[in-house]
Image (cartoon, rainbow, N blue to C red; front, side, top):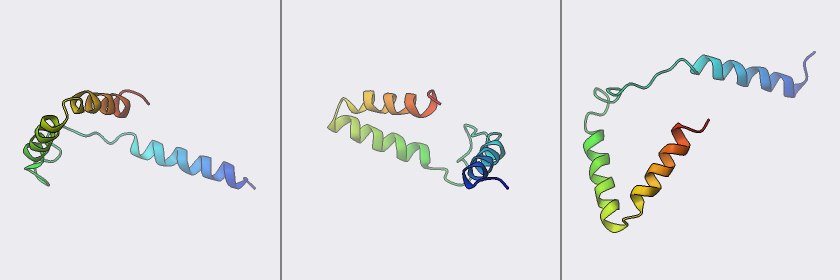
Length: 69
């Protein structure tokens, strides 16, 4: 019988494989939340007015979220 750690590894691998084919498209929120881009743009503008370094922080966050596995 497989150990509990092996079972967890098998389940985690299966979950990753099942979700790895999901793709987020540029128009993903156009139906469910059509105002999301203007809301985010507005809030980012407000944050940048308060703290100019916020732009660099956001770029860094997106880099680590999107480009680093």
